[in-house]
Structures are given as C-alpha cells and as structure tokens.
Image (cartoon, rainbow over all chains, first blue to last red):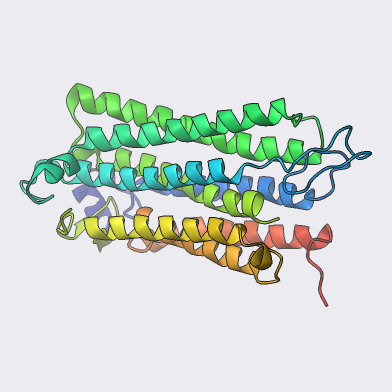
Length: 224
Length: 112
C-alpha cells in the first residue's frame, strides 16, 4: 500500500512510502542540530572565562585591558537582522505555497495582492534578498568587532563566537545560493506543482537556518 | 490577504495525506514571531528585570516557543509524517541532553 502511494506521488517505490530525498533532508537537519548544539555548547562552556577583553556584555577596565573597552555586542543591529531572518521564513513558505498551487485559478483570492501571492519568483527573490541582508548585517558586525579589537584569536569569547556565528553565516550563504538557483530555474522554465519537493527541501533547510538563529540570538546575544 | 486554504488536503511525497496551514496562519505565525522577538529585546533593556532570576528562564521559554512555532508551522512538522518528527526530535533531544551535561561539567549549572 505504501508502495502504491509512493508510485502515485511521482517518486520511485520505497519501503516507507516516503520520498528518500525528504527523508534525507530531515536526517541531515537532525545531524545539523547536533553540529550547532556542539558549537553553542562550546560557546556557553567558555562563557565568562576570557582573561582579556573585549567581552560580550561587560566593560573591560585596565589592567585587564590596555584601555577601557565597552561591551561589544550590538543588540539593536542584531535585533533588526533577526527580524529580517524571521521574515525570510515567511517569504519562503509563501514561495512554496505559490509553487504548490501554480495553475490553480483563484487559489490566492483576487486583486493585486493575490497576484503577488501567486508569484513564486517574487517570494523566492524576496527570501534571497532577506538572506543577503542578514549576511550584510553579519559582515558589518564582524568588521566592527575586528575594528574594536576582537578577532578569532583574541580570547575564548572571540574564538567561540566567530566559530559559531561564522558557521551559521556559511549555512545562510549556502541557502541564498540554493534560493538563487531555484529562482533561475523558475525564470528559465517555471516551477510548478511537480517541483514542489525540491522547493520543499530547500524551504526546510532555510527554516532550519532560521531556528538555529533563534537559539543563537537568545543564548549568545540576550542572555548576559 | 486572503484566507483561502492553500489547497485541498494533499499528500506531500509521503504515504500520509495532510493539510498545510492557510495563508492567514502563515501571517499570524510571522506576527507572533515578530512580537516575541520584540518582547525579548524589550525585557533585555529593563535593568531591574535583566538583573532578576526570572530573566534567563523567560528568555529561554520565549526562544523555545519561537523555535517550536517555526518547526511546527513553517517546517510543517505538525502536519508531516511521524518519521520526520522522529528524525528531527531524536537528535535534538540527544544534543540538548549533551549540552546540559556539558554545562554541569563546566560548572555553569549548579545543583542545590
């Protein structure tokens, strides 16, 4: 029965009746959970153990530091970038829905906004732009940290912070490239319901990158 | 913004038939996520609250709620096959438990 269901949904028969690609992305996401938890654990284990500044939430005074250094984390900027990444997840579910329902007349209602809702190209590009904006915020943050004297070799905070957020940024970069690839395919031949799975898989990856940032934002930036 | 169901119940490459959330659900979820983020940042800037014992648990709860909302509604885990749920929550539980043990080991969490 599972096999019949699988054949009916356009993928080779499998013992579970589920497409192997979707099982694979969930297994991959599970393994990524472990990777990011290990990086976050390392950050938390070394939290407050740096001998020299700059520090994330505390002022560093002489003689611990050559000059007085202010707390280095910029919460307002990171809050905005967090909001942008959260909204990119909304854009991504819109893109998936637009692909899944392409060709179904009136599924998004009527009017100008409905036409926008039906455009998978618009939502894919919006998601990619939001992801790129997040990377821009991260580049700004990294650059300002380096100017303020915090490098990956400066102290335990620098090492664990840059490793954690750098890994996350690398994942966002891969996600943006993936989205741009889907956008190019959409422009070239159009994405339709038969392509739902490839968009769904990229959406799962993108949302995972988002949930990782939800954890990082609280554990690294907000908890003092 | 319309409130049409995205589609009739449809199978998403799995043996189970399920329904995805509607447009309005996606927008409501986004609004809730934005609101929680706003509250998180707001409480960060209240010195009395930030110095209290409730600060860290409050932030952790709000973060966990955001995490769960995205996973359930945007990643469709609430509506998807149970195997996917197991593939995600299994490693997450192992990783979470390892993190707690590691924090005990490094003295960040103290019993008693």
